Length: 406
Image (cartoon, helix red, strand yellow):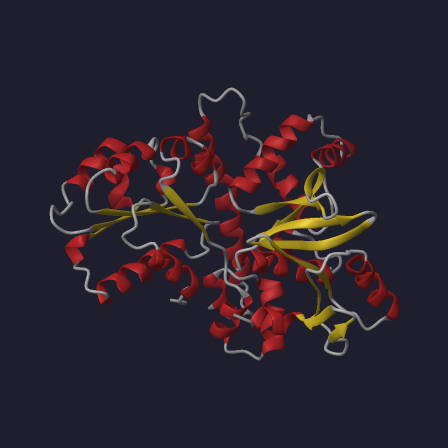
């Protein structure tokens, strides 16, 4: 198992704190493995086996516990009166009204609760309403390049080429790269996320008249393929609707919006708002979307051309999220900045490009950063090894060196 040390350390920081730890992320990004690694760490810290209660709802032996009342009764019987009981509930969204059981366990003395889920809707429904202020979310992503590099035992450049092509899902990182099984594995994950997670999401939305049913899987996959093809480019629901209508499909923007929301709730795509740097406010139009795993993206898109620059941009976006930044797309008058990364009120501005060696490309990437008149750090990340340096306060850094930083 690949050690996910950064996520493991975050759970350890919250150990025994009176908040529910909610680990979210796309299927097969490593949530279940993380819980197993954390349980092993607890044992090394002196926690006894009878203090750990773990239920994985993807395992058949726990199917009866998908009734929240039976789940509560099962765990209540295992609680220890004089010691902390560590409760792990994996893929909890399979249990209708699970938040009722979780809330009842939460108020019991000496309980420390950890749950995982593969759909963001679980946090916008009953859990958020019932447990406001009582939980902390740990948003989990596939392997970072630094984790991938460590597990692959390849040279840096060849490892990055594989990372861009096959993505960062932990199991893929352990597979032979010349093997066709990678495509089969990615197809299975993609279909599972698109079909099963959307189905579970709809079960939790039953009775909500504002939500339309996601019952056209072909349409869902068409929208997913379109979003995958335009990562790094501004896109609107109206634009997606026009694209579908031009292909002969009769559809409303409201329906398109529901389907896009289903894809973001399942952690397939992450939306990014645009930010007015001068006015310091979010803009309402034309988000960008980035895809959680480039392996899945390359699997579903036809091999017509290779957009290396946008692929690198996709990698940088998720690395910024891993490092704890709030990320937006920057607008400064008529110029656009790829990423505005904010942490604790401090901004850092990023441009991302595959190559800076051509003079016109160099000027194109520098110009938006020069238009920003504040004194926050400005950086261009590039794959080339020749343009690195400091240009009047703007740093040009090799993206592989940046990705390997802790």
